[in-house]
Structure formats: C-alpha cells, structure tokens
Length: 360
Image (cartoon, rainbow, N blue to C red; front, side):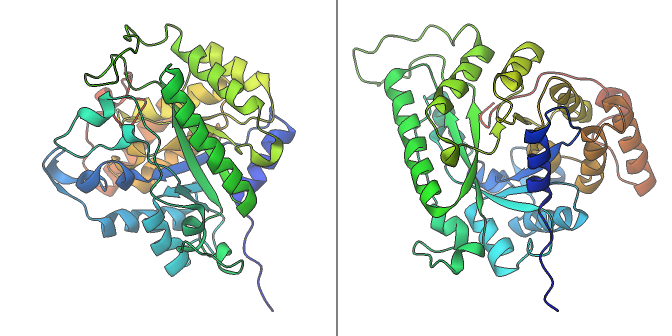
C-alpha cells in the first residue's frame, strides 16, 4: 500500500493559530541560510578556533547538522540557500518523510553581502537583488515542468530592508511586488522578512542633491510595523505572506501589530548569537506579547550542541519551562554529555541586546 507523506507541522499549526490566536501553538524555524551572507565562516567556527580567522566547519558539517535537526523533528521549518536545498531536498529527499517544511531564501539584498575584509556593503543603504529563482527553488532548474516542481521547496523567504528613502524603498518594494506576482503564478508560498533600516548616514559618492540623513526614524519599532501594515494593505490574500519574520519590536508595538490583523502571523528573527538566555528569553518575551513564530539561525548554529539547544528551545516555545529553567537544564545536559560550555552558567543566564540584522 502506498504510504502518504506526513502532514507538515507548519501547516497544521498555522491553521490553528489563524483560527484561534489564543492557542498555544508555536512555530520554530532554523535559519541555515548563512552561506548567502558570510562566505567561509557560514558553517561556524570549529571548537577552539578564532571567530574571524577560523578554522571553520565545512559545508558538509553544516548540512550534516541540518540532517540531524530534521531527523530530531523539533523544528517546523528548515530555511536554506537554494544550493543546500537542492542537495538535501531534491537529491536526498530529506524532507519527503518528515513533518519539517523546507524553505529557501529567495533574495539576498546587498546588506547581507558580508564577505570578510569589506565592511562597506552593510553600511550602504540596502539594494534589492536575487540570486535564485522560484523554479530553481522548486526543482533546481530554471525551466521547471509541473511534475518537477514538487521535488524541492514550496516555501521561500523574501527579505526587505527599508531605509526611509523614497527612491531606494520604492525599488525594494517593486522587487517584492514582482516576486509576489511570480510566486502566485507558480503556486509558491512565502514568508516576509523585514529588517530595521541598515544605513544611518549617507555614503559618500551617492547622487548629489539627496538630502543628508541625520538619524534613523525616531520611533524605529513603529516605523517597521507601520511599513509592514502599509505594504501588505494592497496585497490580496493570494499574494500575502503566510507569516512575518521581523525583529522583536518590544511589548507594546508587538501586541499592537498582532492585534491589528489576526490573519497576519507575527514571527521574530533571532539576530546575533548572544547568550543562551538571550535566545530563550527573547522567544518567551515575544510569545508573551503575540508572536507565534521564531526563526533562529546564528543562535542555533553557535550553540555548544545544536540538538540539545533546540530541545530546550522547543520546551520554552511550548510553555513547558521558563527561559531561565531552560538555561539551567541545558547546562545540565551539556555536563551530562561531557560538552564544555562556552560560558559559565552564571554568565549564560545574563541577557544583553544582540544584533537584529546580518550586518550587526
């Protein structure tokens, strides 16, 4: 008898969250798309290595951790580059018998061009760019037949960085509009990432006549939330993102955005690695104020043991333990497994602001 593939936990949870915003479901995603940004350092540093000089883990190590996390089954989404998705989704069929949903980063705006030795791109206003295409995400080819489209991913991430500059932001939004049209025609779903403005001061050499930028928008959380609402107001249901990936905007604005339109599911991005309590506490805070998705990349990839880290992240997401309890239990598991922690328990229980964008 032919066995049907398992239902994806993402789809089940999204349906319940949209139907009842008070439900306790929470969606976890691992963002293993760092190779679209960091180059050789993308897989993470080997134990004992230097964060800037290495030695670094290899892409096979990186993809091996993806295989292990998918097998563990505690995340709902695995976000990858198109090349990694081709290897794991298409060539290996990793997700065929898994409830984990594969997803592909569909654009790489210039603010995530983070090659070592050049700090110019992140300081310049973000420009739109996409390396891959929807058919390539679906089947690994530019020209996809209908039968081939189910082999890869049917979900993608599209990213926006708006800088309070009408010309630049229009170009960014035009790229998003064009992507949405292509995605709707291809039956390709997406979620929308919106970063904080990445550029404070005008970069020398920009066209003359532009007004100088003195500072970022004063109410940065409202700036981002209002742009999300305004951008999506003109998008009918067939073209809308299935959820958002944005920085945690704080209690007040997060609650307002979550209440504004219950069909718009709020997800937070993890940003820089930070301490373990930074990760667990961020998730708990965001969920308390209305977020229902968390996408953590560097926080997971930099952990002493990714499987143990995700195990306790899931317990926090499901409300079974507090963030502080999870940090203590995680350290206990590391000790049991004989894995040296990056920090003492006392230091790992501390919290501090972490970068909310790739270039932070």
